[in-house]
Length: 290
Ligand code: NAP
Image 1 (tube, rainbow, N blue to C red):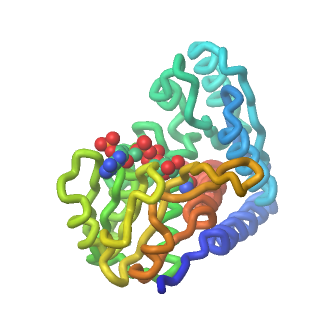
Image 2: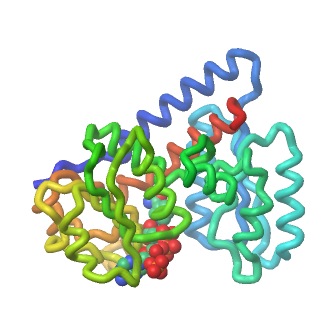
Image 3: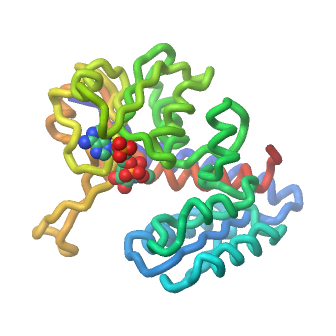
């Protein structure tokens, strides 16, 4: 039976470390780090993520504020607002909650962010820094996954890490991170056109699923003893729940647990680490220049 990697407990460790470092920073006379979160529209999931991020910021001693806009805001007005945040010296980190309404091009929004305030690590400057092994902001979910592996003492040196998913948010930056010389994994990135996906997954010492399809990864795709990291967050209907659905990952958790050596649950695995690493990036934004 696989050992469950407790993302909540590890995230709580990281958050506590951030809180201590924020205290050290402010005790030197600096203002607390400030995170500006931009929320457009009334998507309940986005609103709930944003509330979680702001609460976690406050718990860590970081000033966090949400700027909410109606879904009808024009792209121009949103970009103008982001430029204002870029210019405000007290704002250290800016996060634009995705997805945005269809009439707003997210890539224009990301391109408008000051790369030195881009705590989500999505600006091409930060993506390029990561891809070329230079310091910069690393997207929070991939950074959280590497932290989970390291704090769970899961060896990565020379191990074969297979990532399913090539998004700019998760798969691609995770590939770059796992290749870094302090991690040293051998990386394969798969996507919807990959042939023989189950065969490739069976070769993985570390399998990371970032697809967005419930129960996509099945037990027959797992090498015995492998580490399985489930990034997916999917809603599946569940009439037994008050809200009518439950959250589940991309991995068939019960069956895969019988084969894997380590596994992350959903919820309580990667998700809490994403928030913890956002706090860490905000602290970095306040205290460092790249
Ligand atoms: P995304 O942008 O939709 O990317 C999904 C990736 O999965 C794409 O690269 C796609 O391939 C690949 N894919 C889709 N169907 C496939 C198939 N049949 N076989 C192989 N690959 C397939 O999603 P994302 O933003 O990376 O997010 C992925 C999941 O992680 C979602 O459930 C999301 O909610 C979750 N997530 C969780 C956190 C967290 O904090 N826990 C953070 C971010 C995202 P193509 O490129 O070929 O289309």
